[in-house]
Image 1 (spheres, rainbow, N blue to C red):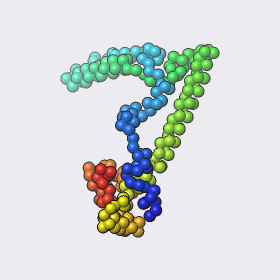
Image 2 (cartoon, rainbow, N blue to C red):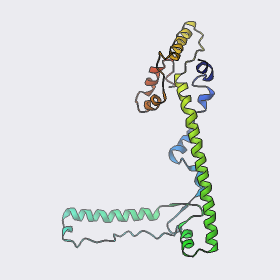
Image 3 (cartoon, rainbow, N blue to C red):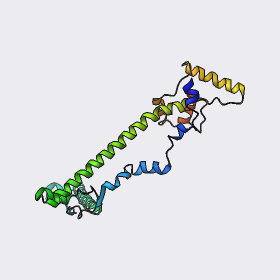
Image 4 (cartoon, one colour):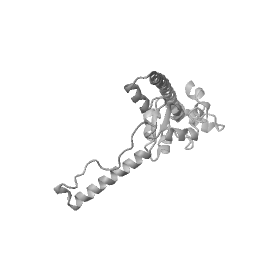
Length: 219
């Protein structure tokens, strides 16, 4: 009872505020969740990456085959040529992402010649990758810790009943509900139910059904 009444002071408490996420952060999460790691990535065109342009012409020609003269075959051959040309045009104009200090040219020279300059670049690239992996692992651990702490809090908020009522009858009604809940005579909103409600078109009503004292705005 103590944890229910004192530790969680309602959906608008400091605990609940800790779960709030700014819209800008939500946008970043939806569009570029690893934006903070952009400093490890460089954007190159194919020439800068040491790659040759993709040929827009089909490398095979089966138009001479006896089965290629039907309308269906001609349509397929035309579509294949168009698709190859479309892909080549798109790929040749697209930007290529590479880890900083680790582009195709450097790797190629290192494997072919192994000059001191290229060796130094590869060492720097190795250190960059090690740093990137360490930061990614740190972010993963932070996310895991947040989930571990937030999930129990979500359950607390969903099951919370505010007993700060001026009306004695209303407070007695809520207190009776809380006591029945503590005695397992009223259902609890559990984690699986919370996540499952996200698939419901009436998720707010589903949550309020288990806790009638949870406002729809907070649900």
